[in-house]
Image (tube, rainbow, N blue to C red; front, side):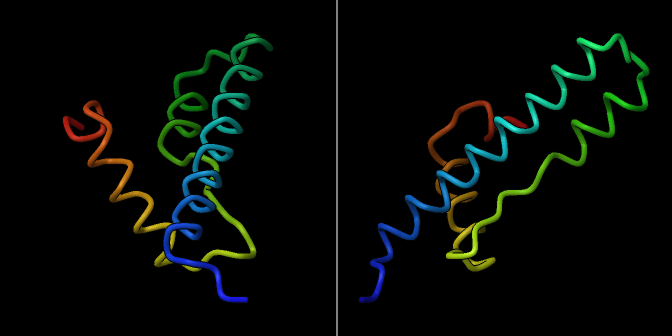
Length: 78
C-alpha cells in the first residue's frame, strides 16, 4: 500500500519533532552536567540532531521543513 503525501508529511514532521526533542535533551544534559563551555553549547545548537526515519526521503524532510517554517512565526524571522 502506498503512503499518501499527507501521511508522509505527518511522518516527516514527527521525525523533526523527535530530533528537536533529542537536541533539547542533549543541551539540557550538557548544562545539567555543568559543561557551560560556549563552544560545546554552540556546537549543539549549530549542529542539532538530524531528523531521520527509514520511511522518509530527503525530499520528505525538506518539504516538512518548508511547511513548518511557513506555519511558525519565529522560524520565518530567523
